[in-house]
Image 1 (cartoon, chains in turn red, purple, green, brown):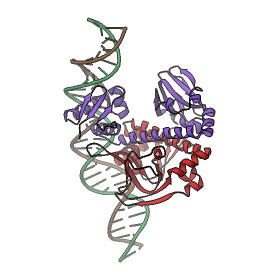
Image 2 (tube, protein in one colour; image 1 turned 30 degrees about the vertical axis):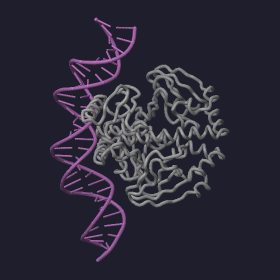
Image 3 (spheres, chains in turn red, purple, blue, green; image 1 turned 120 degrees about the vertical axis):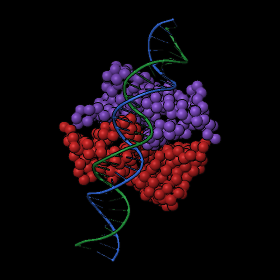
Image 4 (spheres, helix red, strand yellow; image 1 turned 45 degrees about the vertical axis):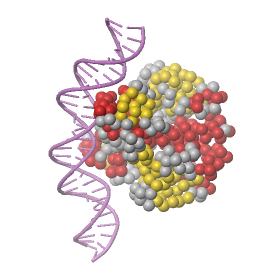
Length: 198
Length: 198
DNA sequence: CGGCGTTTTGAGAGAGCTCAACATCGGTGG
DNA sequence: CCACCGATGTTGAGCTCTCTCAAAACGCCG
């Protein structure tokens, strides 16, 4: 779900791009909130530093993601946002976004819908992590992400990316896929997986 | 964050209670959406049945939770909601809620804030699950849930409940806590944990 | 006191992680 | 066209850590 699908056009135009060098902070805990961000390139880590000085990762946002939504409803940020890889982000200023929502109920509703869907997706991924077995976890992913035809699961990135999303090492994912395939439960094609359990 | 904290009073009054027997379905995939639900008692499982007939758990909502938020923005439900234990739920009718949001931007904003905070919390819990080590995972939980004083972590339910939330067996959690305590990193008190890393 | 659920500790096994080696694919440049 | 290179994909072997099963101590409440 891209910003282009739900954010009103003139708000999209209000986006302010910013290029971050590796290691640079986008914002720090306690900073006044500027708005919500879209990542165009790279990764941004949301981290909090605990009492003993260690970094606690709250979230890693990647290209295409929206993050810091809660900043709209808080005067200050509650964590640091740092990029290790370097990144390009686009800021949608808080005042303009909130003003739009206040005067355009349709826009507000569209945003609520995006948030609600994100929650659904996150809850499902969290439930997935309750499954220990690599094979069963992969099966859960396939069942949840199957297309409307009930048989094909599109694969977006690399298998290594998928392994990270599933919370598995890439080796474990390869073995699980190989096992499912050799048992005839799936068929692997380029950029998609075909379910064979009828 | 209870419904009482953000839902307008007259909408709270519009809530319709419903008692579900064990095994009873609240709604099924494809049903017309009625609204959002609050759980007063028991648990409700959101499940999807895959092509081979197995149930795929998408989420387990417990007492106090709000669920099916996305129903507000969809004509039909996208999964089944079933209770195994029996449950009491309260329905806030879709039409009334949406109508309120359209005419009361403050209410809409409050709902967006609730959704945004839920997303933050879910992302953080998901990141937590990326940590393999029981001890480190517990440390992550403590760091994220530390109070404003930076030293005490309140414990809501039993340790068994906490173990489930952390995705650990209760034995693993006990051992991790015992290890942290014996190393002087934490001090265990009744219903709270004191961090000692200065 | 007796019963039940939580908390705690012990021992063993299994599954995924780690480390390692190799194959494969796509792009680059000579 | 082919050699090279890096990243992805794949398979193997051993190890560690959590899970599982088991048993006992503890606290709470009727």
